[in-house]
Length: 130
Image (cartoon, rainbow, N blue to C red):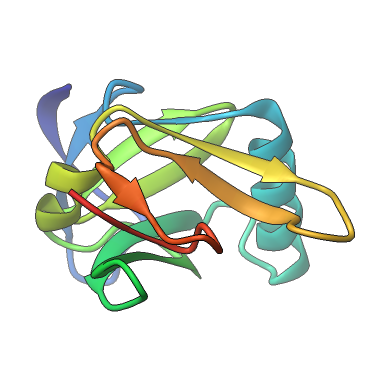
């Protein structure tokens, strides 16, 4: 799941992060296209999508996503579907084995995470518990 350490070359101060693989998180082609489009629109063609798990929501845990310029120290970087995704070590425990998809629909559209570690989720699908 996680291999060698690497240093971001375009960072003002070197950020040390680890490189992971799709066993941590896999990005579908629909999600990759949407992420690439959002990064391009924000002027961050070499940016990353941060996926994190934080406390909250109906079921106790919820996903948080953000576009950033580069990985932060201690992050795990995964390249999948042609985009770069970063996950912090704590969130990696909850996300391992997940798939990020994007559904373009009027109702219930947006990014969806299929997480094999989620024991239950709320009816809106925005939070989960393990």
